[in-house]
Length: 303
View 1 (cartoon, rainbow, N blue to C red):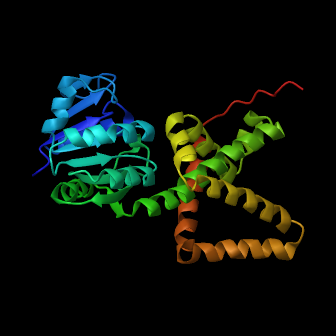
View 2 (view 1 turned 90 degrees about the vertical axis):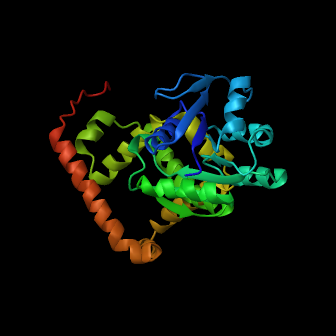
View 3 (view 1 turned 60 degrees about the horizontal axis):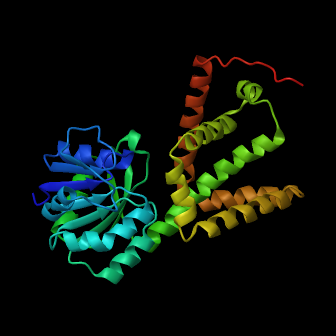
């Protein structure tokens, strides 16, 4: 075990506390640096990440791994000084939703430390068991290998990608998805329908979109902002959605074109078609059960 002492900067936040708890459960000594007190039972230092105290710098100096669970701007700004404080061959890990800019910064610095980027592709409250974690090993070694082995031992599915592959995939999986759902909410507002009445009538596809809209709208705005604003491939994803809406509009002018559109989407799913049909059936069945168990009162809107 080479990762004996791990420091989590931003360890009081949702992602940071997830990793701090998992590392501690695995027998590692974990210290937390944040501007607020962490909830777990960790040695901690309260300070700003961009202005570490003497005690915080000592934590960094003696750490086998420093994990940054911070917004991209803050993480990139502090990396140059952080790498000079860390001991040689220690591991610098970060949990950014956009990886290419950090990757470029590391390439410029050429630090004497191992570097791995991690992006848990799930909300921290869901836990890592059975869920995917993107891993970008930029400067590998025994410490990064141990961290990825730990992720696997916690039940995570470690998917290795490059920084560019990560950002392209995230633009499709998150930027496009979130834009679609937020646009759905904006369209509902524009239509001016009575949402309470809609809820009593909503078929499963609509109810599912409402549920996702509720989740995203109630999430941490900073996380969604980072995904939409910092990813270099985000504009292309939003542009693709705009063009796709126009394709659907065009297809409604001809039944032949509309049938062709559905066929094109089936071809896109390919061998995964039946997998996602099954997932959809399970989701819709859950919607039906939830609707049956929950009474949603309706108060007509004033005319």
